[in-house]
Image 1 (tube, rainbow, N blue to C red):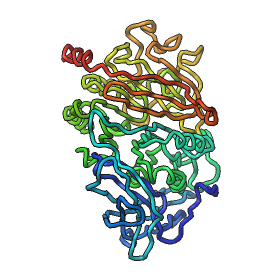
Image 2 (image 1 turned 180 degrees about the vertical axis):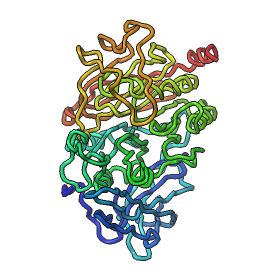
Image 3 (image 1 turned 180 degrees about the horizontal axis):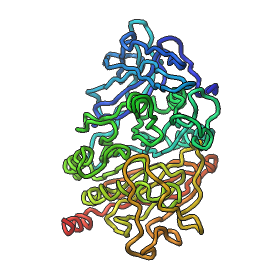
Image 4 (image 1 turned 135 degrees about the vertical axis):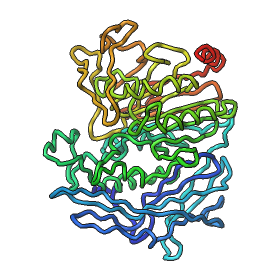
Length: 486
């Protein structure tokens, strides 16, 4: 925590941990930041969030801010009713939504409270193009399971070199819950290192360090997040996800969702759907009803590409987390297939894997391309064992999800019929590698997109591509298939 990239470098009520996020359209954007000092100790008293105003001054010209927008502020606490555990209360967290922006336009901004005065230095962002089959973000970086390690540093430095215009963060961000409330050294396996811990506690200052570490990037490039299991963070009275829900602004209300755990947004000709695996995903629940409504309303003549993301993968040939969220797949996969989702991004498994187009464990030209990028650099290290390796097939009692039921199954068709694991790389698994890295999605037009996965170990090489493929949409073929299934 005393690393220069994690230390607080502003004083008093000046903004830090500045971040931007997309709203549901390119004419609006969220700006978030933190002021004041967080507290950690046996007795903590929350700051009054009304003490510091939430303002963003902005314009298309540098140094001349003719527009101002005000927003909301809040604080949160992480409290533990156990002897010896420390409590935490955050600094003031501010969220301001800028509206009436022009698509594809550069804006310069400062945030803070002008009455103190305590405004940030000038930052810049560029709005994305408006929804259109002919306009797309230049590059979309996809990363998951990031944490705060030296591998994280390499991942982010490598990602910056690839100059993205948007970041998709598929869960497990700070890994604050790998540390005791007293701080100190974290552990790759919390339960192994701290078997007597009364609760899966979390050292919340790691969140503040993560916000400072990410600020140089996400104060100018919008980052869209979805929750992972390391964001659950249980505390007093069964409260969960307090850090995630308070720190991040997402367009849930704008997209008709009543929850920050699932929402959607447009980025040029791409419609993104972000789903929650750690809240109710059953076909009778609110998330499923919202998802169906959102899919019905997608106009593929305006946003031809349909991309979904959630944290734990449905298709995974690694022993780690093998078939862990099979229940979620069984509930939701048919709906996504029915509406021709093109690509699905997930994390959770700490390795890289790209699937062939698949539906219900069967190769299908109309199924999505599933891609796992849970290799951002976290403290838990990379996963190396495959479920099809000799003596590595998990037992049915392994990989129990932290939310939802257990639906482990034996395959009913194909080379692995009657078995829980394949004895070779499954036919639906196209490429896999146990390395840290990140991915870049470049949508070329309404038919072609280039996907590239970059290995961290190749950061200083001219070519760091570990895997690269053109993803091709076939709307005519798949619309016919859709009619047949309906």
